[in-house]
Image (cartoon, rainbow, N blue to C red; front, side, top):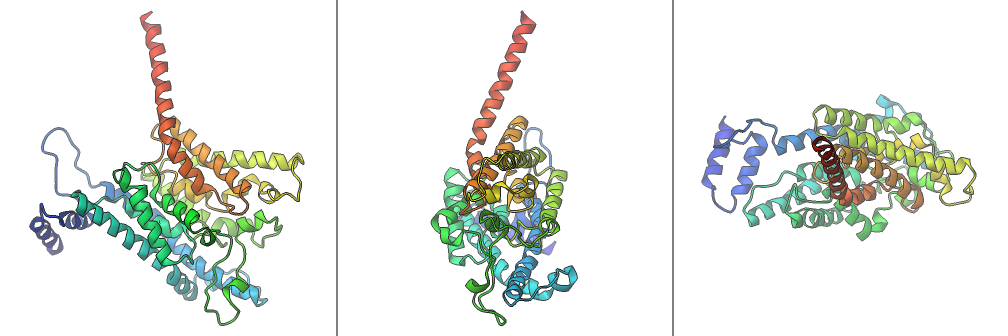
Length: 404
């Protein structure tokens, strides 16, 4: 009670002043808002926007923790491989260890701190300048960004991208709820086009300071998508490794098991759309089947630069790369996704379909999920428009039949 009362006193003290949005944001982040509607019917509940965002963050935390362990594990695995040491994976023996966690946290947590620190600072500045409440949309974006960027990206580069994503990707459209593009993917796109050499995503991160081996360049290796794109053949990982997540990749994308658990949690809490998730997977499967058919019919030579990813079994596309992560945590963004039920099926299907197409036809950067989602963000309002117009026309026809 003491903390709540003190926060309320601060809030009242700065009521009507420039800094009022900052204190209101802190108060409502910890406690439910104490304002109520004074006229008309209304429902009093605690599931405001902050709590909705916090639910998504809860679903992301397991991916973050696993990604921290996996970052350390991939580092030591690459070092061992460079020294000719082969070790079998042991979950409690050489994966869930303090060494893996501390090394991974040393690289991942600064990304989280910069993402939240810079993003929320921009949000507070705009709230103070415009005199409105702090918008909570960045709570999820701040967690997503560290999970989708390369682990060794310079922090200043990330800060610049976050400022761009919040200002250009959201605030210029009017803030949370008005943006047409997913802010986290806008940040990712900015990094991809502004600093392409840092965003290739085709190397396993290894710490520069290594006692048992040489420099990072001497012992870094390709990720799975990079190896497939180069027709590398055997990758050294079985399907169980790909599913559970003991493979190189972006921090949040590797464990498909935890992503599925997060998807079920979001569906159960009615935060994420199961239609978008399922249709995205179906779109990816259909595109994968088409490419597999092209390979089976012999319409493409094995020497082609597209052969490696075209020959990947259609279902395997779901356990490598970011397709599942994008389908669960980004395509389902309620602001930028389609709103109609039929539109969600169309929207999700084309995300999966286009993502696999970009993955195959762009071997220099074999991952197209974020571009596919951004593209469909732009077309989501158009999809909903035609779905609604189609419903109106069908109802008008039924009305004419009844009145005839």
